[in-house]
Length: 310
Image (cartoon, rainbow, N blue to C red; front, side, top):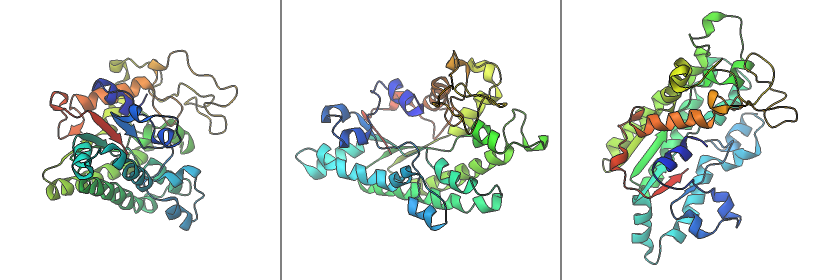
């Protein structure tokens, strides 16, 4: 379960079905009336061709970029609109909560495989944010009104990146043990994203665009783990093997011989890249009570019956 699933559950809605399952015939129309998940694990905001032109070796999931996911939604929308296409579509989009992201981590993973120079990484941020905001604009043109747009998680606390960029320089780490420069990198993304979202609010005053502060909602779990029921070394992964973080880049969770911990609820990190269900639950709570959303999210005022995750 991720933050999105926790949000759906808290709002009394079923877990969102994957669009590719519907497209491939595994799901029927009745399964999607209350929402659909167009996101794909490993997908990027930018198209794979962008990275190929720069000489990066891209994964197959780069073919499922954010704009591709938007196109899938556009293809599906007419079938949800009913007999009156114009009015029906506006009703579907206008009565839905659109969650756009969290996305960008995979985009940054490609340059991070080649460089740790901050100046080399920063130019990618405006391009990623531009894709996110352009997708929101297109959804608004389709009649969407309510959005939740998550920021990036604290990458410097990610066990996989902590392992990859380990250093003996203690000044590179914060009081928790997270790499400061990686967290600063994702904070920069979040700052620029919020600036662009503010501009969209000015251009489209009838919309409700909510920024979801994943970064600080997750960071509190690392800084005060006991308060949230986590124990031991909060940077260690539940499912992994070897190393100071129980993470090994060669032998990962899912490989033969790698055993998960007995109690995942005691861990923030599941496999080095993803958080545990318990951690995502706390992130979702922070969003739903308004502590980590801008403007403050109010569940009691939420009347939407459909969630679209793109």
